[in-house]
Structure formats: structure tokens, C-alpha cells
Image 1 (cartoon, rainbow over the protein chains, first blue to last red):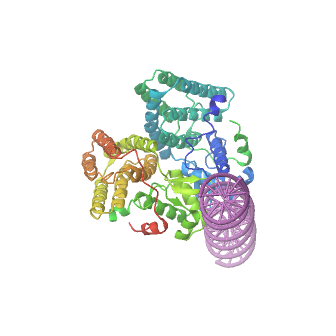
Image 2 (cartoon, rainbow over the protein chains, first blue to last red):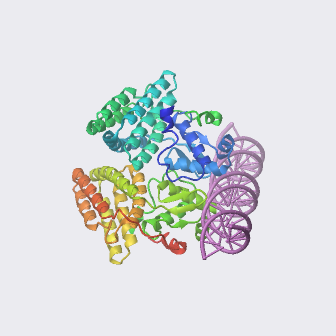
Image 3 (spheres, each protein chain N blue to C red):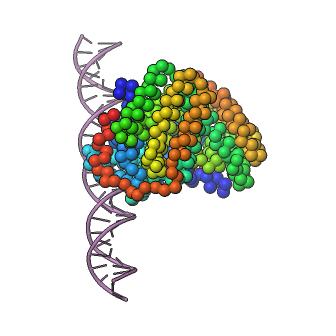
Length: 245
Length: 245
DNA sequence: GCGACGATGATCGTATACAATCCAGCCCTC
DNA sequence: GAGGGCTGGATTGTATACGATCATCGTCGC
């Protein structure tokens, strides 16, 4: 918890979306729900409904949805409203290609600058992911895996790439939700642990190669052919996430 | 013009910001003005003022500003409103580092897939940039240069990277406005022409190396130490840009 | 004369109201 | 019975209203 505390509240140098904390709260709640796959792709997100859930007017909900749409995790259809995005197979491939390019760079730089505290942070994240798996909390495990990648980007001290990657990680959850054959997609605990060792040795080249292979594995584990039915009710799926990290 | 026509209207597979065309119009007008450096960093963007200029209510203007803030070209300060961003020196360095990483990838892929039509498009862009320079229209020349880079990303058929790059190009205009010693920053006509030749020969490795050097040159041409005073009136700076391409 | 304090204006944050659009179900017609 | 058109409800698009916050400027006291 303490380790996570330092990274959960900030989702980058906070980016250019200062406008009120409430819309940020809504964004984060939805984003977390998506990352943990409690909100499945295709789920309709009615403005009124969300407003009721969060006790906010449509104005704020709209702002949140637009922000999420900008991140690519929500799609807005004119006069039809918002829905959790359903990435296509091509989207998925492009997404992982982009991740390989960006993460090759972040992990390489991270390897050059990593500190003992950073290593501890990463280890804690892996442990949390393992714990989540042990308790059958697959959604949480997936989120921890994403946080692991983001933590590396943060250590690279490259805010631009970190920001981009956070978008990509968010969309990855959707891809995994749609195409992962639930077994163990994206829960490469062992590979993450291996990456930590490499980082500890400050070996940028090996780190890069390993990261690319790791992402290849995740992508290969996907079943890029079919997608599940529709979605679930939505209503109370969100609440449980806000503060509970 | 005809060549440009095909790429100007779309700024990626249109991304998740369907919400009305009017806010898109406002976004594009402001973004173009920034790209052409008619709107200088630090310029205050009052919601009422913009609403008056575009004949829209604050609701739409706010949506546009939030979107631009998400792109990093505008900063929102709570209770103080929006202003054109003023990237710091560190921002500038991180920006170009990210551009090197992303554009190394896009130009490499573009080199593998480029068509004759693509080459023509690129040549037209260079020509337009040169024309703009000849007529002392520095702002337009800078925009054309950005369009050149974006066109390459589009040819790479990697929508994700294209989208990221369009953010980075937009921010680059700000950096150049702040730190470019007006001489000839970012107007590497010759280098762009050279890149076209390399692309025509489909040489990914050389294209990558050349692109990185090109970006290095742009960055090196900057005067990363000082920034200009404040800004200009704003009011009628925007109008002149919308349709006029 | 100078600094601190309070009023005033401008600007943003949020909520709500109204208009436009779309979807679904029903009824009518063939 | 099937198809098409229509109407009602729901949802979003946009505008406006009101409250909160901040900056500025004038005034008052020292």
C-alpha cells in the first residue's frame, strides 16, 4: 500500500487537465474499473446514469467522458452516447506495436537511472499482482501488471512517453478483456521478475530485448479472432473502486 | 492544394472525439493558429472571448479547451482560465527525445510501405513550405514542416503513433516559438527533400538515421535558455485560419 | 507617502433548462 | 401476417443562470 501510494494518486506530472478534481475522480473511477475489467468493452455509459452514481451533474460526467474518449478507452457516438471502447483486431496489433516501440525506449532509459527505491517499488508491484492472482482477483492482477509497466516508464524520467504509455496500458486492458483467453494473459509475473533483475544490473540492451519479448508474449497469448458478447448492467460496478486501491 | 486536401481534413482516424463538429472546428482553428505561431505561448484564452469569436457558448469553448489541454498545447489553471502553454526547457528536451523515438519508428515503417502517391504528397508539402518561406510566411512554413512529419507517420500506417506524433508536433510549434532564434528553425527544407529521396529508395535504416539527425538539428537550432515576453491581443488572430488552407 | 484591507469586476465551476436527435414499439395498411 | 410509417420516450447537444473564486483597484489608516 505504502509503495503504491506514491504512484497511484499521480497519473503523470498531472497533465493539462486541471479542471476540477471531481471530473478527475470520475475519470479515475471509470478508468480503474476498465483496467480491472469490471467494465467490459461495449458497456454503454449513460451520462445520467453516471451522474447519479457519482452524485454529479451531466456537465462533469460529460467532461470525464470526453477525457476518456481522448484516451481511447471510451467511444463517443453522436446522439448515442458513450460506451467502453471495443478495440478491433487491427487496433490491438497497432497498440502492441506502439507499446514495443515506446517501452523499448522507456525500459532502456530506466535501466540507466534506476535506484534501489525503484527496484523496491517494482518488486512490491509484482508481489501485489501475485497476491491478487492468489486470491482469484484477476482484474486487480491485470491492473498491477499495467502499473508495473507504467512504473518503469516513470523511472525513465520521460514524462511524454509515460503519458503516452498510460494511454496504451489503459487500452491494453480492453484488448485483453476482449481477446485474452482468460488463462494467464498479461500476468507475466515471472517475466516481470526477470525484468527487475535486469534493471538491477543496469543492462539497457538486455532490458530492451527482454521487454520486447515480454510484449510479444502478451500479444501472442491473445486470441485475435473473436470477441465476447456484450456487457453487464454497469450501475454499481463502479463504486467499489474509487478509494479502494 | 489537391494533395493537401486529402490530409488536412483528417487529423488521424478521427480519434475518440466525436462530440459535435463545432468544438472540433474551434479546436482546429486554435491549433492551426498555434501551429502557425499567430497565437504565441502564454496568450490568455478567455472562454467568453473565444465564445464571442466563434459564435458559440462557453460550453463548446470549454470542451475545445479541455481537448487542447489534453494535447498539451493549452494549460488550464483552476479559476484562472486557459492559456497557450509555455513549455519549459525540460519539456522541450523531453519532447524532442520522444519525437526521435517515435519518428524513428514511423519513418522506418513508412520507408517500407511508401507509394508513388505518398512521395508526391511529401514533395507537395515541401514545395508549399518553400513557397511560404519565399513569401515571408514563416508561420505557414512551420506548419507545413509539421505536416510533412505527420504525413510520414500516416504513411507508416500506424494510427497510434500518428496520433501521438500529432500531439508532439503541435507542442513543437510552441517550443520553436519560444526558443527558436527566428532564423530558420525547423524549416529544414533540404533535409526534408533528402528524406524524400531516401524514402523513395525504401531504405529504412538510412531513413531512421536521417530522421534522427534531422530532429537533432532542429533541437540544436533552438536557444534553450530564454523565452520571449508575453503575447498579443488575440481577438482577431484566430478567424483568418479556419478554412483558409 | 506607503502599506494593508475591503469592495468590485471579471472569470471560471457547476447545475439546470430547453431543443434536437435517435431508437423502439405500436398501429395502420396492404 | 408482414412491412412501413408514426408517435412517444429516452438520451444527448447546446445554451444559459447562478455561485464561487481570484485579481484589481480604491480607500483608509498609520
